[in-house]
Image (cartoon, each protein chain N blue to C red):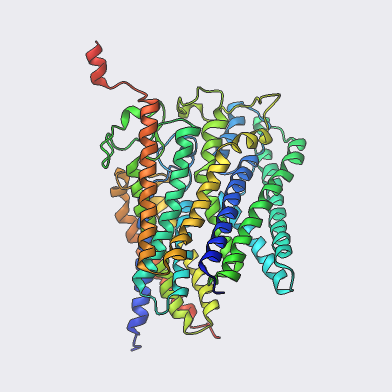
Length: 242
Length: 300
């Protein structure tokens, strides 16, 4: 019987966990898709994959830079750097998007999924314009998005941390960072696409009933897909030579 | 390269400025070429009987198409740098290559999309293609230049572990995601439906009924970019500028420590509070669309 290295198994499991975190993150981010771009739905006016990847990749840059600059960096610090990078990107985007909704299109922020904002307690239904599914970014959506960005940033940073550790033993630091970065990008896209089937293109965030309905199934799928990604990531390491 | 604090801040400010210009130009390029989500209305209009003279380019989602042009720019720049080109020249030539490739995609996607609408009698205007394509290339060139310059600074001066093409790809994807989320709302939510009362909200029944008349003559994409340059473009620029600046500022000032992480979280909290202030401001300024039922009953 072939003995399996426990470190190898841990690495694969960590990549599986990272992918699952990214999948969970997508559910938290309020994406309204094309209708939101016309202020016809609550959330950010773009697709789930675009936004999750966009914010997560900024987190990847900040996490990778932290990893380079701190010798024997603790995992928690790298993950936190990834989370902060992602949160800053999504917060800036949602804030600027809010400016356009407020002063460019002139519509008040309103959620179509709850009668009152769970954080501020503000009435929502009376502020929804006729024939739409809400508009803009009420506080609950904004906060949910920030939590999602943090999870996505942590997920991306964790994959990078694991992979750069594996490849760093085999090839030069620059090449290891490149391969780990590209693989993280791939795992990010895979896990941003999986939940977009579940949420069907739009979700308001944690308060959306859709969240509870689909999150379990999506996470289950994503975990197994990510484990497969982890397996591939470890397998390709066998073919890498300096 | 080890830099002192003043030099680090100067470089960070330069990166923030480059990012602001890149963000602004990315959004304006997507407006002049009509890409991403608002383009669904441009695509739908002929099916509703509204023929128009607006460019119709949707190569892919904005992040991917911008990532593509930026990574081509970054790759060409890297090749030229390895041939001992002067960095600025290499970045300019690289950015130009990326923009030309995007221009090629823009013409083929415009021709292809309009050709698919033959049954709705939507004409393919050659003058629109001739005037608009250079504008798309021009906007994209400036965006590419800024993003590849940021990637160059990060790789060569700040010592980021990723290479120039990969950093350009990531910033291209991010700028596309931001442009698609921020500036496009100004184009899709306001400019395309400008004949409706300001602030009335857009009923989904209006889908495809876009404005086709301009301030003078028939509206084209150059008119759209003129309008969006007043708010949508700059707001997108601010978003990317803030992202680039605030994702690096805490570590530049406080080092690579938990303190910097704490400051980063604090910046996010400040942005949440600012969004709440805007929310309150617009709720007070515009008021509810519907009267509450209790109030109606009280009046009755």
